[in-house]
Structures are given as structure tokens and as C-alpha cells.
Length: 73
Image 1 (cartoon, rainbow, N blue to C red):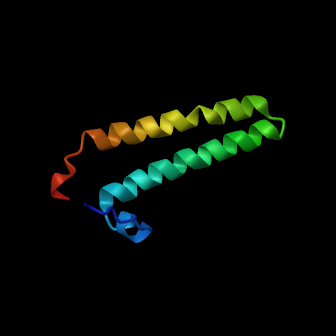
Image 2: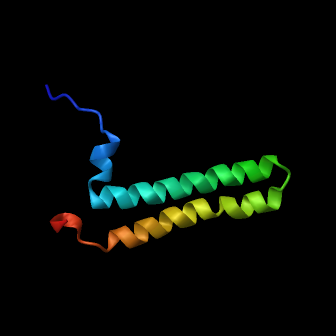
């Protein structure tokens, strides 16, 4: 039976592909937090606008990473 070991942050950061993915995920999460905070502070329109950044950031990350050949890196 194979045991899955937990992933540690130092293992993720040491790989270039994972580091780029982590940056895009962190940017999307920061955008989500900013959007929710704007919404609940009374700036609903700004919250909606910033909330649209989340799928845009993730789409940009997917677009940039999909065309690369990461097998030799």
C-alpha cells in the first residue's frame, strides 16, 4: 500500500512550475479577499469589479502555462 506524503512549501517553491502556479493562485486569492472586503464595506460595485479579476487571473495563468513545455525544466 502506497502512503502519500504531505507536500511541504519548500518542495513546492523549489520547482519553477509550481512557483508560478502558486503566484497565480495567491493573486487570485488576494483578489477574492479584496473583493469580499470591498463588498462588505459598502462598495458593492467596486467589489463586483475586483471579483471579476479572480477568473481573469486564473485564466491568464492557465493561458501562460499551457503553451510551455515544462518537461525539461
